[in-house]
Length: 354
Ligand SMILES: Nc1nc2c(ncn2[C@@H]2O[C@H](COP(=O)(O)OP(=O)(O)OP(=O)(O)O)[C@@H](O)[C@H]2O)c(=O)[nH]1
Ligand SMILES: [Mg+2]
Image (cartoon, rainbow, N blue to C red; front, side, top):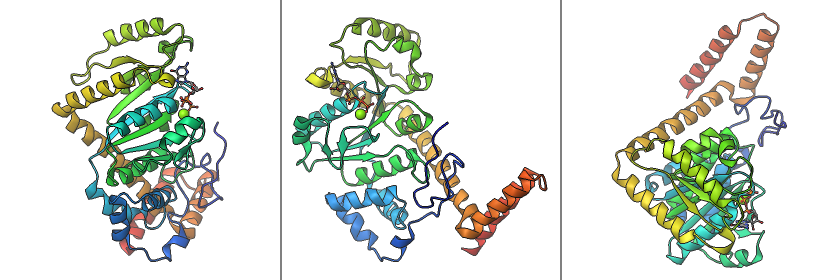
């Protein structure tokens, strides 16, 4: 079981106890400060780094202005190409993300990186792990790197990541790279935000292909055989090929395998070319529309669910009502269905009041 984590705005609740977010929905301190959201959005669109950083922080902390800001930015989004980079811990995701970003920067493309992993060697716009890489990007205004903690976001990690990506999109980033460790459902949901998903494999992880989570297998548009300088690369490639051979085409696209040695920048050009090929094939296929629709259906449902849960549990009164109902059900004084209907009625009332 996961360790209980305090909800950021309401430590009384923990994420493990209740998965829905029963915290107060906004940061109350921020509510009192008047903010010109339109001007802020304009600054972001002009590429102002501080305005961008502030926006991402606002989104992450569910600042009172985050929703309005995202609404102001939304009409200016939809231009980025989002690349999800996932794979087991230590497979070289950060190194490869970094190389791919450098490749795009060399073409004067603006890049945003979201590392959904506190252990990733990116922090506050600089990369800690590797000093040479750090020098490479630290003063480059064309690249924006944001590291996010993996848990504890209101509305869930995938939603926050999606919102951060929207902000980066509005700021004119042509490519957004999202690095995430491919282990849990949260991570699979994050990867689903991407237009193109890279799944990293490395030789020497035992029964790599067999052990790979079925879910990840299904979402991979490109398989990256990283650390292919290591022994066993041929075997993993053969296994992957065999598996891909059996898998049906997905909307006219057959996932490819690209060999890389991220540390030596080998295979990065080939990878970028394969991404471009995927992008082209995708652009021409009717599947793109369907994928986008599916994407927004999922996001809208998650958002509506979140808003709805907030209506139910809004304020102290809401929390108290939930506590009281839970106590009644636990004591068998009320059945859970009747109690849930009472909660629904509360949400209805809260809507009527607005
Ligand atoms: N030999 C070899 N080492 C590599 C290669 N790519 C990355 N590494 C090394 O593998 C280690 C892990 O690399 P990261 O890029 O941090 O891997 P990651 O997947 O981001 O790791 P987590 O974020 O912790 O899951 C580092 O020591 C890298 O230098 C490669 O192609 N070949
Ligand atoms: Mg990493």
